[in-house]
Length: 228
Image 1 (cartoon, rainbow, N blue to C red):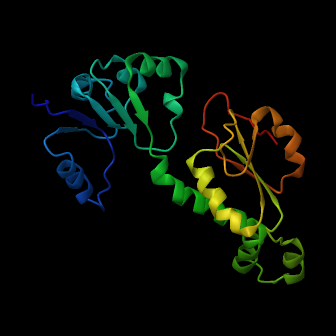
Image 2: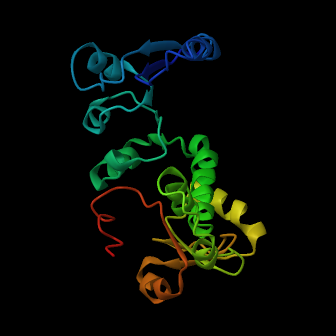
Image 3: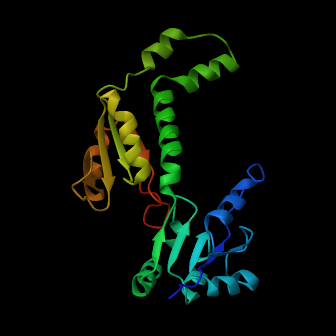
């Protein structure tokens, strides 16, 4: 028995500077149907809503409410690492009841985000913002002050709030610097590569942190989680 081609709803943004990306996706899906919409068409109205109701797969940034109305969905892939709009009890319950798979793009963004975090930690430890400011303005070159305020990362403590794909890659980048790495997450699984504590323990470790990395998802439970 031949299986019917799947219908893939898509509102992913394809940059004008990379026009071949959409063509590559169309070619890669083979016999399956790709229904493409603009990023602003989130499946809540018009043709994009009608198409989403027929889709087996949604790819991009669809509206959560529209996803919950789509009767045929089997898989939703979000084109971002963050999933704030989808981090809701009713949405998770709907996915569970309907056996719908939800995935995000953390594996796409873990490397660039982790490298950006590493760059920020290094720049602050070595006083690069101050040095750049002096070079752009006064050019007084206060080397003694900059040198005195600079720090080596060795043996310093990094407290990482949020221990997903980005944090795991950051740990790999920081490990050769012989830093004391501590992750903070809602549920400690026990298989993490570094010491991980629960959110309730974080206050006890804050006084000892030289660097605080906040990569928690943006939702109501994390707003002002760190308020100093």
